[in-house]
Image (tube, rainbow, N blue to C red):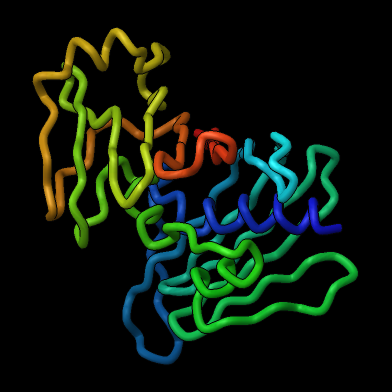
Length: 223
């Protein structure tokens, strides 16, 4: 049970930033304020590689459904066979985690919820930007771009985010491409213009993790 909880939490906290790159957002009128709000719905696949409490390398994978309505996010994780693994909710004031046959867990935010479940926080706030192929504006970041000006790597907040494929290009952002674009590396502590291409495949590596406790997450976003 602890194994499945850890895997689910890792996947949930990584995905729960919002995949706001793959579809055109729909604008809807709220009945209370009459103002337009953003509603995004996406699907994709995830895989996680990490070290368990006994320092054994484990891996897990599955599918996700993601829905954002304004500042509220609901994430459903499913096994490859379609069974529900978890339902995660996030609002500006509360985060919830529902696991099968367990009482719901709540916290003030997703970071606190995952800290309680995993023992350490993960950069949920940064994911909202990284999934848009741009760095988070609040902290320092180092960027690498390809010949087309698209960001192929972000190093920020102890994570390395590699963009391996875009929806409008079948070729991978290979190591040779990164080497060729090394002269385009820049450092920034503010907002950066998002790349033109939509992200199709990305990999996140926790670079400050111990060598015997890696944490790698791969996301495949549906076009």
